[in-house]
Length: 300
Ligand SMILES: *[C@@H]1O[C@H](CO)[C@@H](O)[C@H](O)[C@H]1NC(C)=O
Ligand SMILES: *[C@@H]1O[C@H](CO)[C@@H](O)[C@H](O)[C@H]1NC(C)=O
Ligand SMILES: *[C@@H]1O[C@H](CO)[C@@H](O)[C@H](O)[C@H]1NC(C)=O
Ligand SMILES: *[C@@H]1O[C@H](CO)[C@@H](O)[C@H](O)[C@H]1NC(C)=O
Ligand SMILES: *[C@@H]1O[C@H](CO)[C@@H](O)[C@H](O)[C@H]1NC(C)=O
Ligand SMILES: *[C@@H]1O[C@H](CO)[C@@H](O)[C@H](O)[C@H]1NC(C)=O
Ligand SMILES: *[C@@H]1O[C@H](CO)[C@@H](O)[C@H](O)[C@H]1NC(C)=O
Ligand SMILES: *[C@@H]1O[C@H](CO)[C@@H](O)[C@H](O)[C@H]1NC(C)=O
Image 1: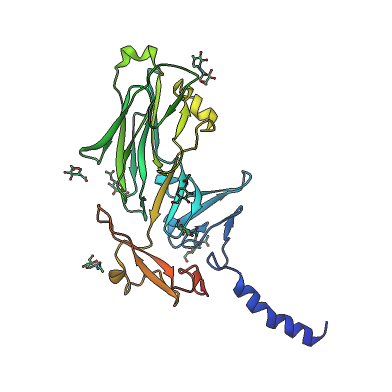
Image 2: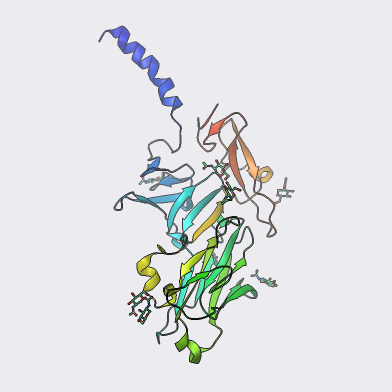
């Protein structure tokens, strides 16, 4: 190879590198399996904006799976977006009345102090026959619904419009809730019904087909676990909005933690919510695309 050829290779390299999309911090993995992990998220220590965005990539499974690392939600992330993430069944409770010790009858979702909150359109769902789920904000009951079954039929299906299921809308921006399952019929009547019931938070897509599940999921505490939702129309997924700062854009712009560092990035205030949540995300200016949180991340 002549020196001239070498030089021309070096001249060609920088544009080639620049044209590749920039997703991760320098020196960090930008993918977990086939899934791109966009900064402020990052795989491993020091690769994310802060520990809340740290991803644990478990490559013992095929394909590898991405998990959030924070204590409250060490659950699998199945989608990353500029404004939200989608997580597989993180907030879930089950109760089986045939077991004397019983399972957990209540659960708490506490995302206070994290950059995450429920997105628009999540619901609190209960599966069961003659069961009620109550939603509390920590001090008062603020919602709930009751699920009834027409009759016991092991071969039948429950669905969220007619039989064995109910749901309660949740406010956008919710960071804290408690849920409790209550047996409406009373234990004495349990024998003729299914012993188990479940409650969980779930994203709802209103124009999708009715959510349904086989009633034998209510048969015993292992039926649903062993099947891992395979016989339901879809497993529960929770959609969480994320923010890079807990103040609005005008408050954050002069702070030394301001995250929209690229010159072609703009700050976007979190949308108005009933709960008055404040915060922001970043976006590339019009005509540019890419990652507004990284130097050189927005490209035309
Ligand atoms: C992460 O960054 C801190 C501070 O810069 C440093 O002390 C630490 O060694 C880093 N950890 C790793 C795993 O690189
Ligand atoms: C995020 O979701 C929005 C709205 O659904 C979509 O327009 C956008 O392309 C998504 N971004 C990524 C990176 O998937
Ligand atoms: C929720 O979590 C935050 C931060 O960890 C904590 O300060 C708060 O006490 C928790 N709230 C409740 C009601 O447990
Ligand atoms: C819970 O809801 C009640 C009734 O809406 C309200 O008065 C109370 O302040 C709320 N508590 C918390 C901790 O949000
Ligand atoms: C439900 O449980 C009962 C008792 O354990 C069992 O006999 C029955 O076969 C189960 N039903 C289904 C559909 O698995
Ligand atoms: C549901 O709505 C989304 C976006 O609003 C659309 O892309 C999708 O095709 C719709 N699905 C059905 C089954 O109508
Ligand atoms: C639990 O339910 C599953 C599915 O309905 C069934 O195959 C299994 O035999 C049940 N186990 C017990 C201990 O009843
Ligand atoms: C930003 O928040 C501050 C206080 O938190 C408030 O005074 C100001 O009006 C807000 N600005 C906008 C544009 O919403």
